[in-house]
Amino acid sequence: MKIGLIFIVLIIVLTSGCKKAVKSDNPFSSTFDAPFEVPPFEKMKAAHYMPDYLKGIEEQKKEIRSKGATKDPHDMYISFHVKEPGIDALLVNRGLKLFRYEI
Image 1: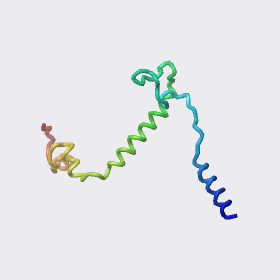
Image 2: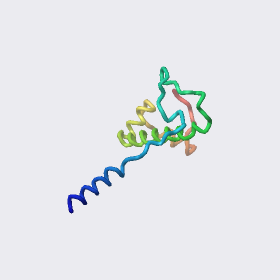
Image 3: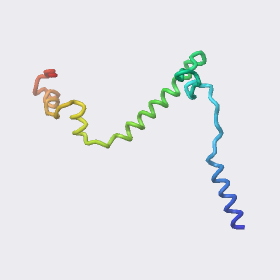
Image 4: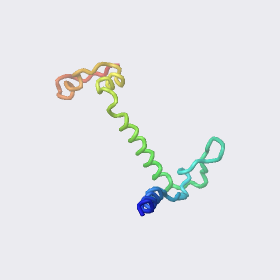
């Protein structure tokens, strides 16, 4: 009795994760057999762009968030601006110093 119940639960658990493949008519959602994987431009429609465009944005956001707290903010500032941070931006913002663009 217990073995039968365990077997049934096991089958339910294993088959509940199975999903049927949904065939999409969106040419961006599949790989291409053409040379250099060139998409079939004759099959593309304006409605095909937005879903994959938004999907790409979400993938990029996930990648950025995964790398978010990996470096010290001070080190990130120096690597981006190639200089030590100063108080000049604060002084200019408060009107205590005139803005001068320096390279």
